[in-house]
Length: 359
Image (cartoon, helix red, strand yellow):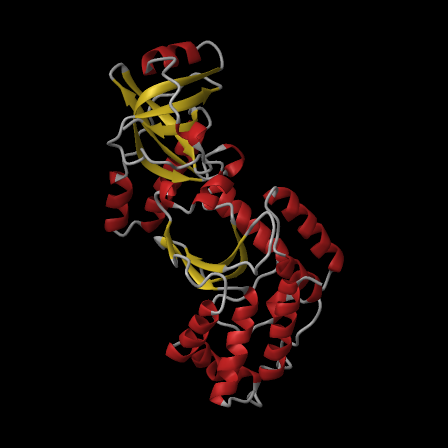
């Protein structure tokens, strides 16, 4: 058993002693060990050459994480849902591939930082949808359990006789200055005590170097290769056969949704150079190294598999007028029509595969 696994095992032992499970949600092993093993293999393949931390693998094999209900927000999630969230956020939305979810609740995540090898416990980051930064929350998964046990013992708290009162007893202990001071003490004693505690989501170029490498960002990814077509020449060539090329111009986003092939998230917008403007799709999985604000000249690598459609009309005034007039059903119908038209147009829009700011 590795030192990181042993550390987590001891921390959970202390936690279980300090916070005995209630009768409604007793702690238990995973309900389907075979499914857990399949998820571990699937996750290992998906994140390679990164690896799951040994303590996370041990936790999934030993416990049903969702049964640890008396923990700070957000609570631990199941292995299969963790992998689903990683694919959705890291692969489709462009979030750091090096951060893997271990907890999710009400739009908030705890994410373990992956590595190719582990000499120290993996640190735990926090992120919620619409946040502007990832925040280093705990120096390890073990420190989460250990801090909870310590906070309960300091307060002298005892489990309530009624399981419905557990939140009222434990939630205040796992939030506030006392709990924060315990966690900070754990940081000081850890290998992560001097690390930067906040990493802005944008721009990617300011992420830690090892995050950028895990994302596939290197000097080659930032090197322009030169335009092969103008916008007009590309559109004319795409009218007769599938085509891949490079264009130089300005991208302007007009919205987004599950518009890319397979329902993946993408922004739709326009790409303009002195010869013309075409509609384009920018999948969220494309490395975001800048140039998406509509003001900067960029080089894009673009692929068209069909003739390029006209720029879709996105006038929402009829929808707004219907809603303001109280015609909610009509507004919903008009909105559905607009969404259907946009999805149809998106199937013909050329896909941006790479975008590099030139200045």
